Length: 423
Image (cartoon, rainbow, N blue to C red; front, side, top):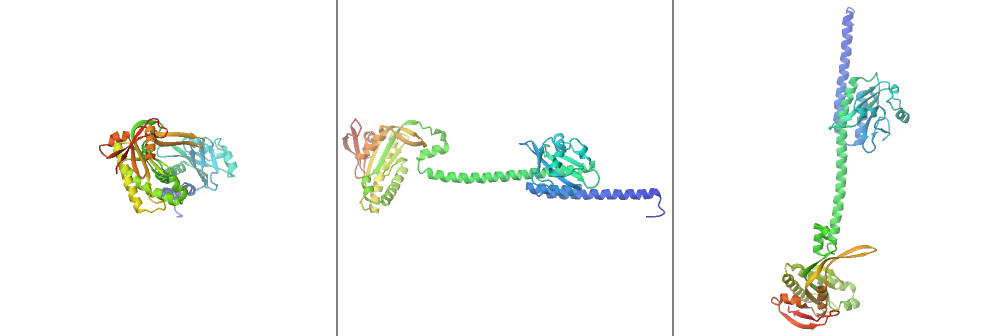
């Protein structure tokens, strides 16, 4: 020091050095504040974020402990995932409890430099944690919509008391914290949504596989209704003009009794697969199957339309049967069919059956038309196509037919006229 300097000069020099020190300290704080902002913006994991907040806040505020409280809307509590020197979820308080609760409720910063003399201070927290709080600075944390989502609190300034300048710095930190918390929550929401979406996709893929398999067991029209308007599957039947074709294998019981079941099953699959191609080409719909038989329904725009398509499909089946018998050899010889068609009004729709094991629906055409088609088919032998008089009246000018005669069918009181369609 200059021995010749006056007292005023000495005082000015001391004051200048103090001012320079304050400026340096403030600049260092701003630099740390900038660094904490960069760090917080780069972290999206909530737990890691809170740990970073606490460490950086203590560093910049020169305090022993800091706590970030967030508000839980469900429990109406303030909770801390991480507080300096404490375990996870160590602190959980009511939203109006203690200094943090007062700040949250009033949405104002609060400086208390002698906490044990302030009636708002919650002594239970110190008793529970074993930490002695000497002074406290707490500020509210606001999100981008100005909603208070929690508080940021620092405790026990290492040198001196908290001042308004400290509150300004802590509020700056809280602004960064609010953005980081929202980013972290958004990340967690997106992560959870992605997981739910992945689960939903897997579930949808499984359902699609199940649907693909189940549609093999139900008529195409039913599958279409279920997919587009499932509420229309009501169990009610609607009167409708249809033509019904029955096809079954002649002497099937004898075959199953005498020959290997796998060989018989292979024959059924080979033949019926080809027959169903014929049905599809003419707009028929497989409604029921049994071990050796098919029930196929035709629903055209007019009665004449579906009668013609049913007969055309039957004639194609006869042709396929001939070709299969030439191509495939079985120990029982050729595969021969019973075939019958009848046309008229039937009740078409679902039949609901209930039992102790649950409910089951079948989709079919019921009534005398269907019964006659089956009985007419039973009169057929050696893969000949027989039709009833209603069908005959609709196709006699299209397909050549021979009258077989009038038959007394089982359990049918009236005589039934039967015709043979020439292939």
